[in-house]
Structure formats: C-alpha cells, structure tokens
Image (cartoon, rainbow, N blue to C red; front, top):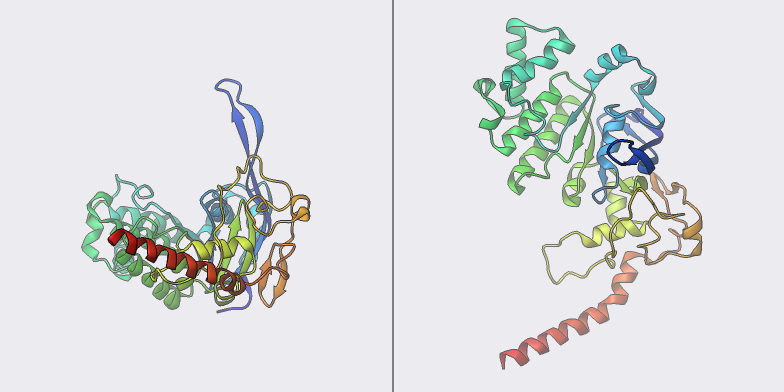
Length: 356
C-alpha cells in the first residue's frame, strides 16, 4: 500500500436549497448534506465510511467522483484537481474513478444485455471493438465468478448476488484506481454478502484498487477496511485505523454505534449506553457540536462551539471538545455491571415465580 494519497479531499461542502411551492419554488432553507469534510485515501487502501441513514455518506461518495457538483472544497485525484477539469478531461479521468451502486438492479439498463452493458465503457474509454472487446468482456465476467455465456443474458435473468457481481464487473471494465462502493452488500443475504466482500478483497489484492466503502454493517466494515471514518450529520466526527477505532473509540457517537451493533452472545455486557432520539434534520442542524442533543456527555461549550477534527493519537482524529476526559468504554461497562447483575437476578426471580 502506497503512503502517497491517491485521493485528497479538503473541506468538501455540499448544500442543497430546500424549496417549497409548486409554481414559485420559494427557497426556505439550506440542507447541509456534506458540511466541511477532509480525508485522504492511499493507493490500494480501503477507507470505510459508517453512520446513520441521512448523514451524507452517499452524497460524499458522489461528490468525490463529481457525479454531484460540490458547493465548495477541493478534491484532488492522482494529482488532478477534479473540480477544475472541463468535461473532456473529466471524462478521461473517469476511467480511473468508478462506483458500485447500492441497488444493482436499478443501476443496470434492463434494455441492454450484459455483453452490451460491458461493451459501452470499453468502447467509450478504451476504443475497443471486435474480438479484443469480446475477449475483455469474457475476462471481466470470469473475474467476478460468472461465465462468458452470461453476456447474452439480461439483468432481470440474474439473482441479486449475480447482479451485484455484474455491477462490480462494469466498475472494473476500465481498470480503475479507485472505486466508491456505495453500500454494495446491504440488499444481499448474509452468505452472498460474504462472497461479494471476499471478491472485492481479492480484486484489490490482484489489481491494487483503492476503495471508499460506504456501509451500515460494522462487522462488514471491520472486515474489509484499513481505516474507518465515522460521519454524523454531514461531518466526519472520528477517523482512525480500524484496530484503534474498534478497540478504543474516542467519540461518544462512535461508542454508541459500536454499542448498538448486535452481538451473538446475549449475556455479553454492552460497552456503552446506546444513544436515544433521532438524528436532527440537516435543514436545521443544532448549533455548536451537532451531536450535543443526543450526547450523554454534552456540556455548555458543546452547544456553542463547533469542534474541530483534531489528532489525539497517531492517525486517530476526533471532533469532540472533551474526548480526552471522557470515561473509557470499559469504565462505563464496569459501572453498569452491578446493575446488569441485579437486573438479571430480578428477571430470573420473575421467571421462577411465573413457573411456580
């Protein structure tokens, strides 16, 4: 894995105008979908992005590829300022930047066969035709675990897992350096998820591809990622190596996400109390730290000042005013253990009473 960033994102912002009315479309506010985020991705690295629905993960992925025009900020890919490129130069750069969409069925053209679908990027970006293009299509299908005769079929003739493999093959067609994986396994069964994740890891090892992996499933993110960024209401609140982030989370929101993740052992104690309430509206975000309305450790300063994303350990950045002074997850679990024991004893007594 190279230490030189392949992708650098600096203070990226995307605000959407909120409109009301059918005829006049009066602007009533601004939705802050992505609000000042900075991170980088090295060649051959996987950066996982997690957070609740509506926090801006997918919007961020599309901004990186300039599928959506940013409001402000800078995106540098392989030495090129993506925002400054004209249409022709951006089209050339898109060979190295691809995306795997969340819904493979909606992202595949139902009127095109698999062969025609894969031929489009090969013809557009590689100028291929005839026998070389057919050989390349067969190679792509074989790479993702399908057969060459699948090129004659249409998307509706495949299962969900096979359609996702088709989406991966299309993303691989131009031999990209970076792929944005927008929740590529969220709609799949667990067994198929494992197949797709293992396929992505083997392709990364084989071709040196960098991934931005957007997902809700923390177990999947932990398995595939090298580093993990946690987003909340359009901002990155914590970013670290996966071992550091899962082993010693420093932001209250990250702790709550890990505590809310299901555990196979029902007797295992929780690491921290899960947060309550819903994520605030990005149309009217809270002042100061946007997480203070749900944070059990919030103080007056949190309501006033926006916390900067600062480095507290090697490669571990956190946007929290009081991250150093917060009790550790182990301390919280130790304090809760006596109460958990009393609750378990009470439940056993009730069960015995009902049985009698």
